[in-house]
Image 1 (cartoon, rainbow, N blue to C red):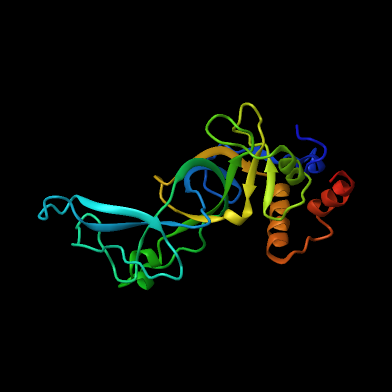
Image 2: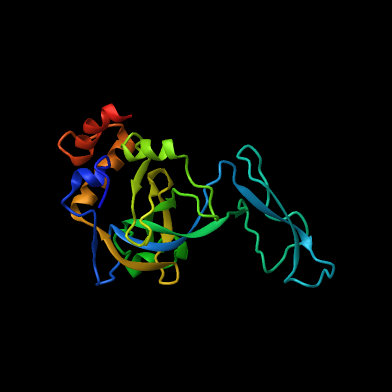
Length: 237
């Protein structure tokens, strides 16, 4: 059951999440995946040189520092280290990451024929998913949580970049926040993600599409559930 003052409550009795035991990778599938935290200022790892033994190519001294767009840092400043190869024009970025739930937005498009991949670098045609990360809204000892007034305004469909949801994998039914402005790629490899038996219903996917359009254009289709919810919640903000 969802609160009446939520987009899921407006959609009711049509379900938001539905069980799907096929465990196939599809749009709308809820998965577990390691995702990096998106920092306002990214960090870089800069190799200072080899460790005490200059013949040891497996150990290195390094320094962590900010990656600034108006600087031109290099990955290595000292002797090259085989374990940490350096390529011209590249840097080594460092991110904190956490295993978290995410919704599959795209399964990666059409596979590139092998004849077109011949002679190309592997990354050019390696398939990837697009996923929407989910963040727990309530503090639990491992996270600070979100301010309750902020969460309530998200629940009232006020922001195009946030969707409040109650994921079916949470036994306590605590709210989570999907960040559409954190959509990111994940490698399409069985070691990169873990499937759950839950997918968004077709009606929920239609709401998600309207929400994405709102984020990208500032416009909400007037015939959709999202618009209906926003109109109904205007006096509650």
